[in-house]
Amino acid sequence: DGGIYEKNINLAIAKVVQRELEKQGVKVYMTRTTDVTTTLASRANLANNINADLFVSVHNNAMPNKSTVNGTEVLYPSSTVVKNGISAYSLATKLQKTVSSLAGTYDKGIINRNNLYVLNHTNMPAVIVEVAYMTNSGDLSKLKDNEFLEKAGKAIAQGILESF
Image 1 (cartoon, helix red, strand yellow):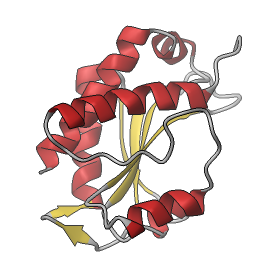
Image 2 (cartoon, rainbow, N blue to C red; image 1 turned 180 degrees about the vertical axis):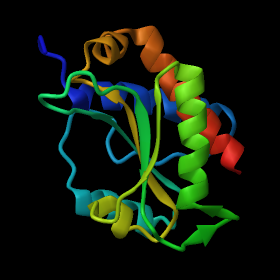
Image 3 (cartoon, rainbow, N blue to C red; image 1 turned 120 degrees about the horizontal axis):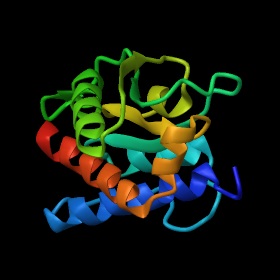
Image 4 (tube, rainbow, N blue to C red; image 1 turned 90 degrees about the horizontal axis):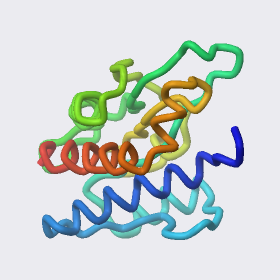
């Protein structure tokens, strides 16, 4: 839509998450900080090599031919990995609650997904936050608003902090 790219929205939100977590003294590793392509394997490998406590991937959704579908959902694997008392399920549950309530998106719930590379190749609790739907006009207008991106990033950071 009019030059709006998911990769740019994702990075803008992720940078807010980084800033908010670092304000609280959390060490944050980003898989990218500029517009570069990183492979799924390199993302999982980075998290594993630094022995990260959590892996949180920020994305936005699309549902072609179903423009009424909207809202936030968090994807998590069936993994039984628990680190610092946090499981992927508990992290997904917390992030779903904070993002949908603080960013004001429709709460689509958490979804178990075992076929996604980064959720299956990380050695720590891992989730993918799908903030909103780019194929929904209401969600897309939010994603074009810097104030919304700020809210979404702060909500993800808060969910991570509350998980600890």
